[in-house]
Length: 144
Ligand code: THU
Image (tube, rainbow, N blue to C red; front, side):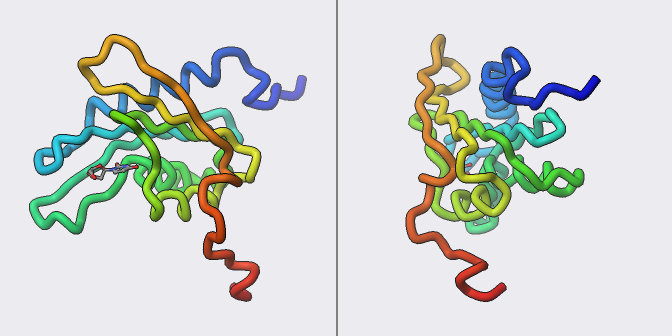
């Protein structure tokens, strides 16, 4: 029997949100003290997570969202069906938005999980990938 599409499987949204929160606990952020976690759901139904990883040379920090997307792609998964980012007032930065839209179709849900590891409850809002970055750099327009 054909496998159900991932978004028809029950509980995927909660699993994605919980995975982002769990990854947030692994954030390496001794400079900003701002932990961020992210999780992406790929076409196969797998979830890849990421956290922000900072460095004493501040400019080398990488955001949680890019870690999660790059982990998925490096595992051979190039289609992001949904993404969750968890932090205090979580929202992906501009650089991450450009990276997300490279791999996520415009209808892919993007969940903003307002949470920090000591909070009791999380507030979830969100958008769709196609709304993340108006006037984004478009490889088709650039002839790439
Ligand atoms: N950060 C993320 O991981 N994701 C975002 O969407 C925004 C910012 C990280 C980068 C840095 O480690 C810390 O949050 C403060 O900017």
